[in-house]
Amino acid sequence: MRRIIRLPLFLVLVVILVACSEKEGELTKVDIKEVIEEGELTRVDVQEVNEKGNSEDVVTITDPEKLDMIKKSLGNVKWEPNVEAEMAREEDVVVTLFYTFDKNMPERLYEYRIWFSNNETATIISNKESEGYGRLDKENTQNLKNALLN
Image 1 (tube, helix red, strand yellow):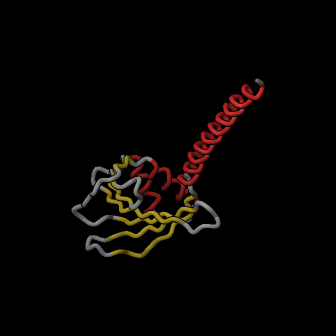
Image 2 (cartoon, helix red, strand yellow; image 1 turned 180 degrees about the horizontal axis):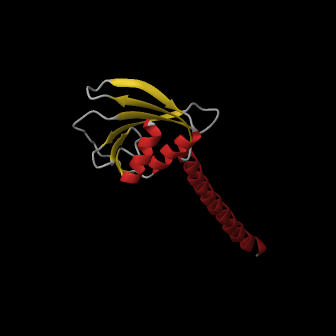
Image 3 (cartoon, helix red, strand yellow; image 1 turned 45 degrees about the vertical axis):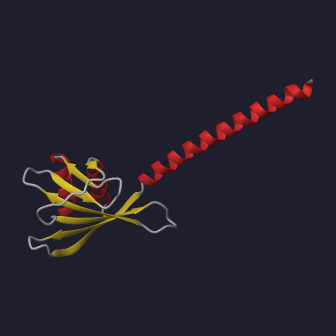
């Protein structure tokens, strides 16, 4: 009689342990994803494009204050992923962001093509799959412009 009671009790205990370990694994995956998305911005290369579509010299930004301003400004872009956008003119700047996620791995590069408009907003096309095409408001555009071009 005792064996009959122990076997179901043992099975219930195993099911509970398996269920708890699966949930813990799911939480770990979410935490890792959040950490990956919050990589450290170590450097930004800015390349201005003139009216003829020719690229100017590349300027490298490593100042932590400017890097932080760039990261915050780009964090406020309203993205529309999976949108194929074409612009009538060449971009004003091409910006390459260098992110470090792990010291033992190479940097990841994300390229942003940015158009500054007359109404003081910006249109941005990113090569990052989760972003795609985006718009930036006046205040953040001004902050981004100051950090990139000054």
